[in-house]
Image (cartoon, rainbow, N blue to C red; front, top):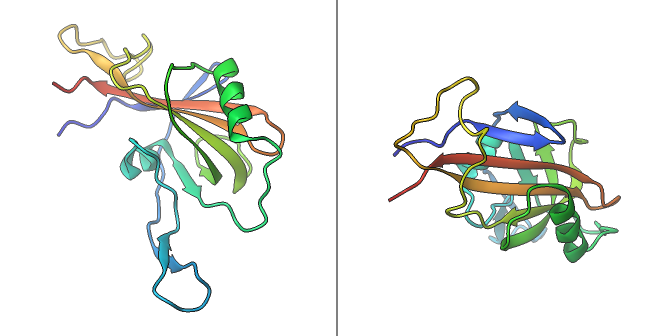
Length: 167
């Protein structure tokens, strides 16, 4: 299995190569010591935990009492108006973000808009910095996530990764 091309987080006009760890321990979420458990991080549809880790992103569940001032629909509209927007959205997820690649406040409550990008051609800047593109290989987007502050409604950044198209 080939790993995707280097990963980039796009914030305004800045590209940042990133990497960090993700903890997948489980914890008791029922509070009564029963066997009801949940991973302490949120997984996204169509995005492997490994890719999130490589992007330097860890998403933790909202806590009881978290009340976003912005709705999921508003967050999607904000994401579409600010970053590269694709036709389909897989999901919009409320989470506390821990991101080693940006200046987000640690544990900030955000909406993550997970765009469906299967088969979308990658932007021309995809691939290692300074590397010559392989003319014989189609490079496609694998992941496109837009992050919106759930309290202020501020668009924060777009994180995308690309790799070779799978046959």
